[in-house]
Length: 339
Image (cartoon, rainbow, N blue to C red; front, side, top):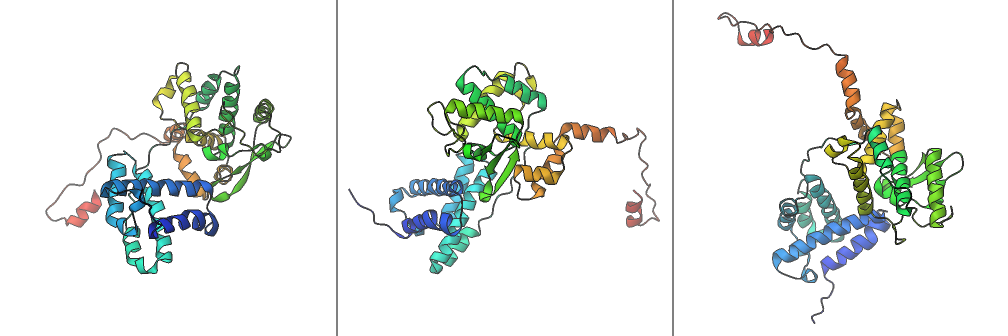
């Protein structure tokens, strides 16, 4: 069997993922894994495109033409959205910037890759749960089973905190304060920590879950685990939410019209805080947004607020608008200004 010695590509990938990202740039393991997955996906595409093994590829095999073809493949064959395409391209750009410093003689090669632009992505309407829909979803949980009690605690904590899915999955017993004042610590993007208050009811649910899982408050294992005792995954959370939303549709038909995913719980928290009169600065800090501009989008989300706004505006009359008539002695600009 032919043994492939490390080439420039192999050495660069190892240094980029194992040293540069975590040690030099201080990126979280989740970010490193995301970059790794994007680069691995591209390598598999290029290898298939060139009919070669991945281990045989070198830097010269991955030029900007191959990168563009890979991005097109993501959209055409994998049906990825422009947003997902841009996430993959961001990882490739980061690797190209690293290569430019590691191999200055390849600067032009890197500039061609860095010149590939991100694609403009259209924004979808934000889907969130109304209060009665959240109640219906929680009521659909069978709390007589151990998994049901875990699911109820999980969904309640997600709605209470507005945490990102990964923040919830990373939650450990040592991050909980289940005595007054009730709160928990979340580790967000960029390794930023924030404290989030929780309801007494949420604290009681988490306390019961820890007792049932035989975890003490000083433990470092994840709070939310599957029935095999392994850490719950993002796919597990998506499955749990979808299962109870499906069950709740019979009681609340409006759920059938919504495209819900775990991040919808975070959106729901933001909208309900806004409707409760909480200011945007507080909501931004609550959700761990890097900028309040990110929080501003929730102002235009809630339909009740939009209905209240339209009710305060007088509808137009049915009278025909007066249009200035054209006269031969009138200049074009004067006529346009009179319209």
